[in-house]
Image (cartoon, rainbow, N blue to C red; front, side):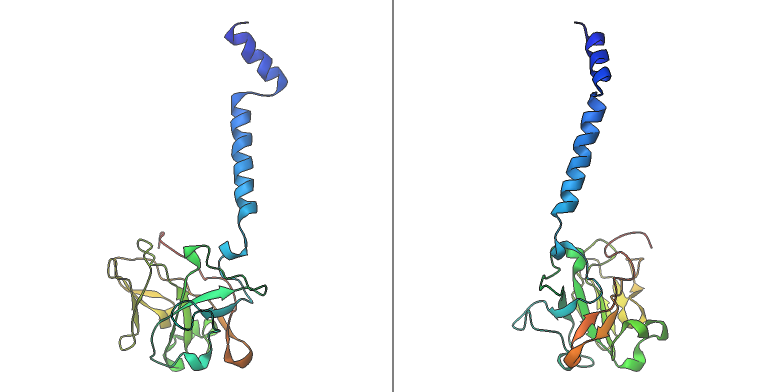
Length: 193
């Protein structure tokens, strides 16, 4: 049997190379989606926030624990079943607190008593935001020195980043705890402005 006859026989049976490859790709994609657990998702409405690092890691984030002008706090979203959403680096959250009257009018619905939650992933090259200057009210990325204004919806104050930091809307829970009120306002991480 020559090559042309084999090809004709395979096409009669419905199995050609392209069909097999496309089927394998579809199976792999479906398996990857099924494999993702709740910890791999971004923060969702109703999740509670806990402290993400340090001696108080895992404790609920409360308004009393976030003084105006205090330090930047890394937080983790936890769903109702206790799953920490820390399987994706794009789920990283940072919290800062400013005086409530310093929060821009269009951002007040996302804040709770001056507490703002933003993505911890810089929109320039994807580094982790770790700097906070409470005097200038700016978050900073130490990789390429971009600066952001959390009270103005994560607006870029100084490049090279061109895209604002995504904001995570907050709600007040029982006992002054902080809850997630909705998803990030835009996709976390680098991307077009």
